Amino acid sequence: MTDALTKLDKLKAKKAELEAQIRSMHARETAKQRKADARRKIELGGLVLKAGLGQHDKGELLGGLLALASQIGSDANAKAAYKQAGDAALAGKK
Image (cartoon, rainbow, N blue to C red; front, side, top):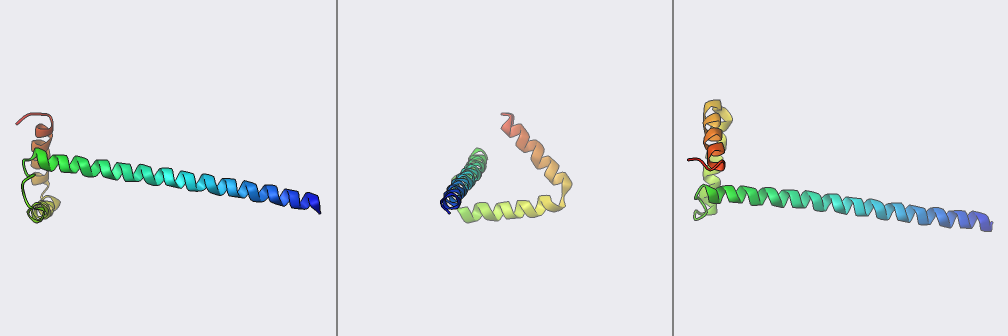
């Protein structure tokens, strides 16, 4: 009986160890995703500033972005033109 209890205790300890590893891996992945999300938001905010729109109200910015999203969603030529202008600005050209 003691051998069975010892084996059971070892299995419980192993289970607890594996559960801790799972929690640790999950926490690392969550932190990694949060960091990537924060970086993306910072980059997008930087684009707003680079475009000279930092002084505008949040509602104005969102309204403008919604209008832009509607336009480029249905107009491939506009999308290509905006991309070309944006890529040039990012490269330091005007």
